[in-house]
Image (cartoon, rainbow, N blue to C red):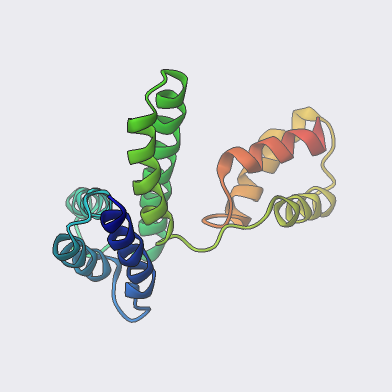
Length: 170
């Protein structure tokens, strides 16, 4: 068993090195699938296949053959959110085995996302938006949220943004 874990760890290390800035997400995912198959790393293979499936769905939904980087980030964030929700449910239902599988996939999918901002950084940006637009009171959350989501798109989780916005205006 330790051999498998060691092989998996080595593959995960390689997976972070795999991402090439010059390659598209699709190319990186295809390379990841090949490498995971060779390493016989099932969790990574599941994660890469999930990303590939989401990319194919996104490409067929739109008329053009390529999707832009913003759409890719939104798609990856959606996959991350699904995994986090599944982990929550599995933990509540005492299914640690399923939660572990989701966590393994989550780590691979998150490696393709840009680095997320810390809570303090998000709080500073939202506080700046509040002061720039002279917003106060809970009734202005509807005005703040679109501005904050636009400023922090892809850099922070929407749930975190919402929580901080409610704290600052609430």
